[in-house]
Structure formats: structure tokens, C-alpha cells
Image (cartoon, rainbow, N blue to C red; front, side, top):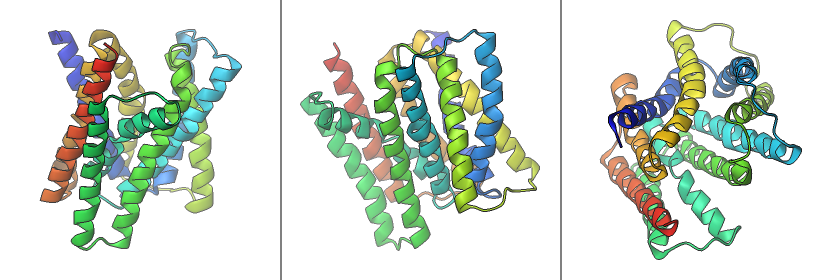
Length: 293
């Protein structure tokens, strides 16, 4: 990877890690679902202008349905559960648990799509999930409160929702224009989060500090638009295996951001469980890269 690719990869990792930190800032003042409904509702018109400027092609009807389901599960459902989790447990833990999405995708491809996994990939799955079990188990022994326990469940649900969305969308990935896909899934996510916010959180927030507004702006523009665009640029500049490996750096960096900027505390068990989880993910990615040749 040349200097240009290294800069792009480093910027992507920092932006992706910051997504959890700024979400932690926003949910300290605003309800999570309303925060996302406002974020998606403000982002969709911007994406529409970008799609029109780039003359993005409309997807076919079957592919549009996959984009809608990606928004329902892979973006709206994923972030709704993740932001609800971040209102209960440290953002670094949520980032780590959500990073297990590739484990769920691999398991889903094996069980549902009947795609064989090499032995090294199964070892990665076992190690990765043992890390997640260690995270929850040791915290439970330390006295897991109800709110914290629900945070773990929500974070695992977020990873599962993202995996479902990506599995559904996978067949259309090479056919749908990037900005059309972003617009479609964002619009669906806005409707989903607005409905959930009205049902579960009551009235819309009517005041906000500058920190909350700044966090929402960062989440919307830098992460929601810039981060996704940078990811596609990175895929064109660096090998796919390298891009996947770089994504593994985001959870530990998110934990550092949470500690430094939000005063969150991580335990030794969190570090050990995190290393096991990321180690399992690395094995899985390595095995799949070798299987593709």
C-alpha cells in the first residue's frame, strides 16, 4: 500500500472509530432514536442532491427492494440498536461487539447459502465468539446491572441486524450505484427511526447543547457521507484484504476515543475479550482471502 492509500486508510479508520464516540456524545442529551431520525432526515436531502449531481442510475425493482431491506436492517436497524446500546454501555464495547458482523455473515453464508468455510475460518469463528462470551461473562461475574446487560443484548442485535442487511444486499452490490444505494437506505432508515422514536420515546427533543449539535453534524456529514464515500475510494486504492484488516483497527481506536473524550472505563477483561474477538476476526478474514485465491 503506497503513501496515498495509507493516508486514505488511516483517515477511514479514524472516522469510522469516531462514529461511536460522537454517538456517545449525542445520546447523553438526546434520546437515541430521535437522534437518528433527525440525522437520517437531514442527511437524505443532501444525498439526493449528490445523487442528482452525479446522475446516479436508479436501481431495478428487485435491487431497489434489496436497498430498502439494507436500510431497514443494515443501516436503520443496526444503528438504532447500536445507539440504544451506547446509552447503556461504553461506546468502545459497542464498537467491538458490532465488529463481530463478519462472524455472523460467515456463519449465515455457511448455514443459509451453503458456502463451505475452510477450517481456519471455523477456528476464527470459535475464537471470535469466545472473546464476546468472555466480555459478557466476566462483566456478569463483576455484577452486571440490568441496563448494562440490555446494552450487551442490543449491541449483539445491532451486529446481527447489520449482517442480515448485508447478506440480503450482497447479490446487488456490484449493480447498484453507490449514491443511489446510500440515498435509498438512508431514506428507509429515516422512516424506520422516526416511527420507532414516536412509538418508544415520545416527544421530539426541543433543545440541544453545542456539543450535541456538533456530534450530530459530525455523525451526519463526516461519518454518514464522508466515511462511506471514503470507504469506496479506499476499496479502489488498496486490496480488499487490506481494507478488511484496517477495519479491525476501528474498535480499539473507538475504545481509546471513548476513554480520552468521554471518560469511559474499560476493564482488563474487556481488553482480553477484545483481543480474542479481533484475533478471531483476523483469522476469519485471512482464511476467506486465501479461499478466494
